[in-house]
Structure formats: C-alpha cells, structure tokens
Length: 280
Image (cartoon, rainbow, N blue to C red; front, side, top):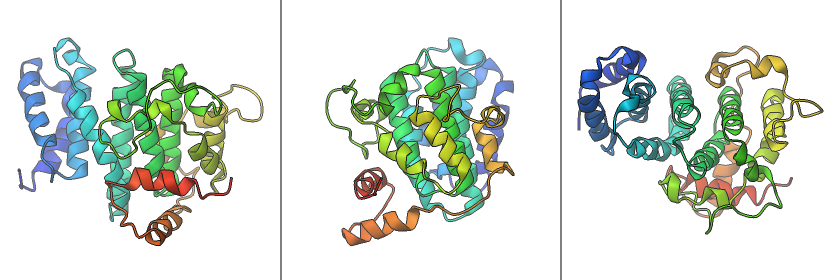
C-alpha cells in the first residue's frame, strides 16, 4: 500500500490532466490505477481521483481501448457510503464533487455502455448519503440525479409507486456490487418525498421535479436558471445557504435505538429502515 504523502497530489494531478496523457501510457496507467483502487485502506479521495482519471481517459482518446471498467464502477459504488463519515467538511464536499464529476462520465457520457440497473443502484446510494450531508451537497446530488433521469428516461420506473418491478428479487442496499443490488426492484419515491420537504427550497424543488418525472411546465417545473447550473457547481453556489443535514441526527438516534452501530457498511440499509418510520 503506497504511504507517501505525494500520492494524493499526484492522483489529483492525474485526474485533472488525464486528457493530456499520451495514449501510449493508457494501458499501463489504467492497470496501475486498478491495482490502487483494490487497496482497502486507500483514502476515499484518492480512490475517487483514480476513478476520475480512468473515465477521463476512456471518454477521450482511450475510447478504443479494450478495457472493462467495471472494477472502477464497483470501487466508486463501495466508497460512496464512507463520505458521510468524513470529519473534515471541506474534504467531504470535495469528495462529493469528485463523485458527481465521475458519475457524469460513468452514467451520462457512457449512457450506451451502462445498464439501467447500475444507474439505479448509484441513484439509491447517492440518496442514502444525501440524508447525512449539508445542504449544498444535497442540492448537488439531486441535480446530478436529475441529469441521470434525463439521460436515461426509463429510470421513471423508480418514481412510479404502482409500477411493476423491472428486476427480479429484493433490493439489497448494502451489497457493494451495483449490478447485483436489484435496485430496479425498489423505488426512490420515499427518499424524494422526504427531500421534497427539505427546509432548503432549491433541494425541495429538485426533489419534487424528479418525483414528478421532470416536467417542463406546471407546478413542478424547475426554475430555468437552476437547470443551467452544473450539479457540481451547486457546491459553491451562493444561491444555497450552507446548513447541516436536518436528518442526520434522527438517523443516528434511530440506529442507537435499535442497538446498531452506524457505519459505511450498513448505512444504506439503515436509511431504508429509518424511512419506514418517517411521517410522510
């Protein structure tokens, strides 16, 4: 496991300038980054830089490479639930930014190469961590999810309460494999209903817009000004007041009441169970 303090800035530099890397280095670089993300004790931010570098490459001159990037999808998916436990607020917001930037490459730009169940799994997991994050991060996440719905219209099944499940089996929120989570057998109606009552009006508006299948007119139409803002740019926007999560303490209290120690490994299932106790 690399322990040098230079690792983080090197990975940050790679992710920033990956589009300038010579094509001759792509295979070896992606192989090395794959070895890195396999390291269990690699910091979340470093893992995210690895993933971003890979998908910048694969979205540019590396499109012709015969590489299956599933390892990197799985790595990002498994790291997401660690973000709420990041104690440094600036680092936490940076991690959210990297996740959103990565997923734009992974789910939007590669829309023809990614399955609907994988996209749904990422959406479920993003909503789970959203309950623990400050306001700007919540708005950024909801804006990102809205972009996935625009890219993948069939995701509307996730907001149809009476729709038949598209996937067989039961949703497994804590399984760290997005393709096997059965996310399409679930829905996001409960999450969005809770977020639609968020004290921040922009977060509430995004949730209601997604819940109502992103209408372009009517009561649930999104403010045109907001829809032009990139999801990650909400993290630094002055339009949103930075406030702590209104849900986090309630979820931790729920876990304590049920004698559970809330960790990144059981965060998603704990949120699913907590939502059942929330008055709609």
